[in-house]
Length: 379
Length: 159
Image 1 (cartoon, rainbow over the protein chains, first blue to last red):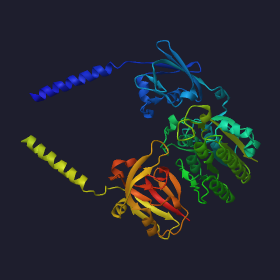
Image 2 (image 1 turned 45 degrees about the horizontal axis):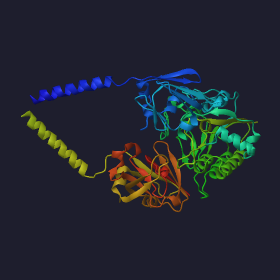
Image 3 (image 1 turned 45 degrees about the vertical axis):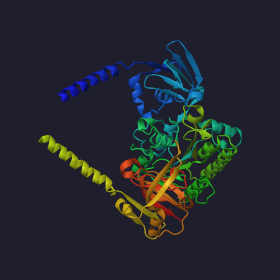
Image 4 (image 1 turned 180 degrees about the vertical axis):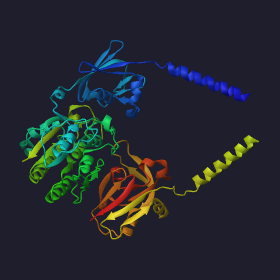
């Protein structure tokens, strides 16, 4: 008797749940980028972004990136009642969240958008290269296959005996321009001007390193959030190893990302001077003095570290830029002939108010997403 | 008849589970940590061996995270000094801690005061409560948590 009652009650609750679930309000939002329809969002699409959901919702810029945006300048929100709101994207990049019920929270204000219209930075039309182009370019120069998921293109035709990847963490394109104008980088200024490049989103080192090594964007290589430190996909280091080439890396005190296939050397602060870039430089020069490997990655972290600590443009960060410019000069001077050199940043940096970090990088904004890519050949 | 038997079986299973939970025994974990580099006697310890050694407790340690809120935490495990002594490490400048997921970091000797190879987090085996961050973790209480290498497999001593 009791079992029957409980059974019926269970069935009733199930039906009620099904009815209520089916009655959840439907919503639809049109997303346009630079005047072109880019996506249509609804509850099902929102669920496909659930991996990125925070308590506030899914970051709107995650959706904009998936819709094709690379660097956003401004955004307009149109609500069903005819209300229109507009922002410069840097004002709200970290404060715009789409919730499962179709509400868009901007600075804790709840909006009910019918459409979201994003406008790209005008600089995006001048972009000449991407971070994901570096692996195919290096592979092409060495005469080995690009990683199997690589989606980037070759930026420089021609073969080289060796390739050096010089990784200047956090030295974004706009910061490069400012540093050049201020006369901080005589060595880099002597080179041919860098390509205006764009990194992948989110612009953080682990994700960028996965993009660099695989030549693919995050939705393909799968490293889309902080905290993932390796990829199972083939990387440039794998294809070099498979071709019998010698690959090596000189890192800072920590390996930000697994460098499977390369002999790596860490450069902790063994002299206790509070920084690791001098150790990276000395380890790189020592390695080069013994003969350069076919593929070498050298990673300077200091501009990023001091940018976080003091902010881009602070005297401490400027001094670090000068130090690393000198280090680049020493390394370039120690290279053997027929070496292709690519010097690049993984992301940029912006000043951030209301954070324990003076500088930061995580948004679809010019300062975070635009990077310089120098391509040089040692004759 | 059947329901009585089921109740007894259920009670018996619950009792066994409770006994297992209260025994405090180390979980069966296939894991090794090696001490290598500039040492006289390189060592390799299994998880079981580490669990059988004297355990040091670190209570109310501030975990300074690179992202998110800092947290007050408690850990227990084997003193790093003991392991380094067994391996015959003399004076050294840095250690390189390597993890199974490919992470590695070089830590200065002066940052290692009170360091342990932790097996438990807040009294629970890391292997059981947070297997992604275990089963063993380097905890250096005087440094930010980016040096607290989880999935620790090797410590290289650098002169």
